[in-house]
Length: 142
Image 1 (cartoon, rainbow, N blue to C red):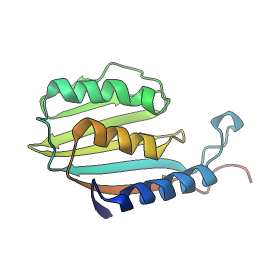
Image 2: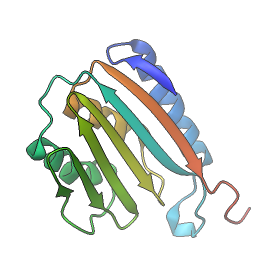
Image 3: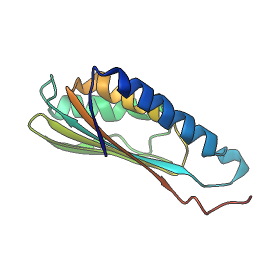
Image 4: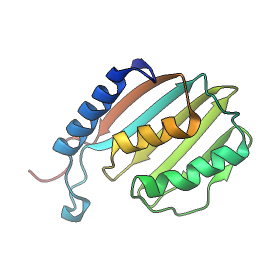
């Protein structure tokens, strides 16, 4: 895991490298080859906004469109956690005081940089921890 001060220029460089790697290894879903599916985990610290049901609902409502995914349900949200079921999998959010964990688990490649930047814009953290995993690298036709 890598920690960043959100205003750090290295964050932009790192996100660009992650995105370049993701798209270089990914294939189009239309080809029916499911491999290199990103699983993005963002641990967000010291948020500048109050975390509540309203802003978690807004985040979960808007994120699918930002990363070109289809919602299967409206977001299910309690005071400090929520989930949005997607045709491609799900987005979940867990929070505690000024800490938020965002988990985007998908069977479809998506733009990691867009997802990360939208998360930063929404929650306005001072510190961010990024973990990006690729699943099913051995599936598919070569």
